[in-house]
Amino acid sequence: MSTNTVLAVELGPVMPHLGEVILGLVAFLLLLWVLTKFAFPKFEEAYKARAEKIEGGIKQAEEAQAKAEKALQEYTAQLAEARAESARIRDDARLEAEQIKAELRAQAQDEAARIVAQGQAQLEAQRAQIVAELRADLGRTAVALASKVVGESLEDEARRRGTVDRFLDELDAVSAPAQN
Image 1: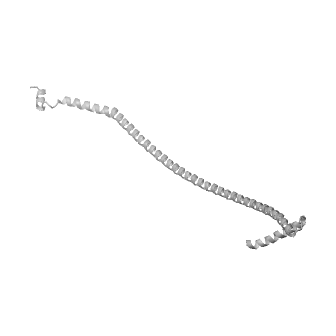
Image 2: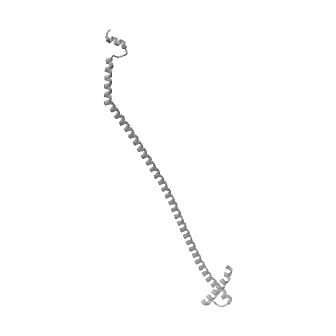
Image 3: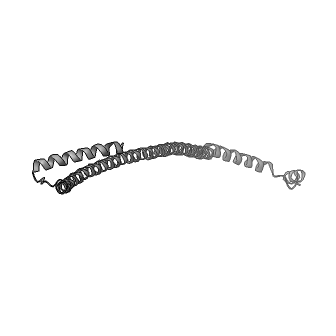
């Protein structure tokens, strides 16, 4: 048997020859060197770029969330301000309505007082006119009756007026204590 066969027999069928192991080891080292020199840096760059992209995305998301929270706070503040403004406007409108109501009430009371005063003045004027007419009518009737009773003509204006005025004064004097 040759040395090769002896070695193959001694090492067994599963074990490769020493030359193949050395050749495999050199190929492995060469492959490891190529991967370390060219492939691993590319993998590292890709990993680093992806990590930076993810971190950038997280930062952008955090910034967007911060902006959204700020916008929400501003919206809430504006909403509260708008509610306060609407409450103030509503209160102002109520006050203005109360003022207008008070002014209209005062105007109505003034108008009512004026109408009552005007009515009283008209009543006084009508009363004075009626009293004057009644005096004149009473005077004529009294003169006619007195002429018949006395038998003397009281046609003289001055006499008649004096007699009528005297009679009415006496009548007023008698009716004044009765009214009190």
